[in-house]
Amino acid sequence: MIDLNLIRQDPPGAEKKFKQRGLKIELKALLKNDAEYRAALQEIEALRAERNQKSPAAAEDPTTRPALKTLKDTLTKKERKLNQLQAELNQQLRNLPNLHFDDVPVGKDETGNKVLREVGERPSITGKPKDYFDIARALNLIDTDKAAEVSGSRFAYLKNEAVLLEFALIQHAFSRLVAEGFTPVIPPMMIRPDIYEGMGRLAGDQKEERYYLDKDNLYLIGSAEHTLGPLHFNDLLLENDLPKRYLGFSSCFRREAGSYGKDTKGILRVHQFDKVEMFSFTTPERSEDEHHFLLSMQERLVGDLKIAYRVVEICTGDIGWTDARQFDIETWFPAQNKYRETHSCSNTTDFQARGINARYRSKHGTQFMHMLNATAYAMSRTPAAIIENYQQPDGSVAIPKILQPYMGNVKTIAKKK
RNA sequence: GGAGGCGUGCCUGAGCGGUUGAAAGGGACGGUCUCGAAAACCGUUAUACCUGAAAAGGUAUCGAAGGUUCGAAUCCUUCCGCCUCCGCCA
Image: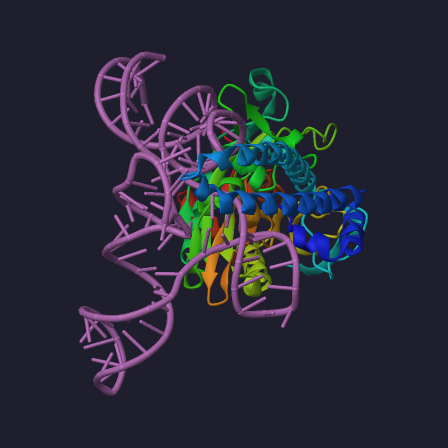
């Protein structure tokens, strides 16, 4: 949730940023509500003060009670109205995204994203590169036809080496990052609505993206991020505890409601996939550094696979709801002849922390932490990138050296007899 | 699914109608002592909002929302959450 004080301080500035995000948000109604709320609050507080002051005397002198009774009745009426105002105000606040940093590139959609650097060499493939999905099917690694019959579109059976490859990636991510001091976590994959709301993940049009279990009043998470953040729900840490870094593994569930027709073939966009995710809690002073640290971890993980990638800073029109700044890593897909998003890295500043009341204590007092999240490896997309980049002329797929130890030192995935 | 219990400050935990923002212990922070540290001792230690230049004052907060009352952490109702036992179960 956004800080109301920021809105009060500079309404035009906030409106400008919302506009840069492509949102038409008028703060006029909200500010009017806020002013009304504060006026009403003042009035009520004066009445309460009067009541509190006179009440003790009523214990001895019952004749003063009728007057206090009328005072109480008017108070009740006014309090009801105050509650209503507050509820409205809260609703309005929840519909506001985070404010991005001033130097985030302005743009209306993903075409406005800024490429920061390209790293690594693209593979030299003789002939026309084959699509990862065609290769995978030929090698009996993915079956979406059967999955469609059993579960519907955008589901897949991963089989054979695709499974081992996924486990290898997971193990590599954990061994690398646990060595860096990240705490390994397997978080819950379902979450309560109020916590989810606090994480800012039901706001805007994100709600449409979630699976909801009506019978139990629970949502399926769309990323480990969603339950890693609430690891410090209602917590008060000490400044010395920070930064706190976690590495979570979870399945991710997404309805892909707005993506009809996009990536319908294959497994780049599915309702369910696994992901290893980094999550950091830190101080406001250090959050930009932490953001770059997480990004550097991502580059190392992609670099380990020896696949070409580029780092992109996401522009205002494409940035996430909760984010003050977002980087993506896009990985090279030879057959598509372009980079595709495989990693995302976000600094949500205190936006999520305010929503889940995650604070820390420093010499300057108690304040909200800054919270950041970053993909380590997203399954299906990363294995797809490996398959497409490591394809061999004979139709087999080489396995990145760093993953071989996790796969029984097998060097290639070849067609089975 | 059946039966019962419980939700208080950073934590543990007392309080069960009126000087209770809330005892006590722990933790954290500051100080004394020390070459330094530990121990011991002394002190400090909630948050939000409102008025105010400040000093200060006011209001709210004991799971949440309602209700009873002049007055609620304390009584009532509903909801939410947690725990224990039994049953079922990877």
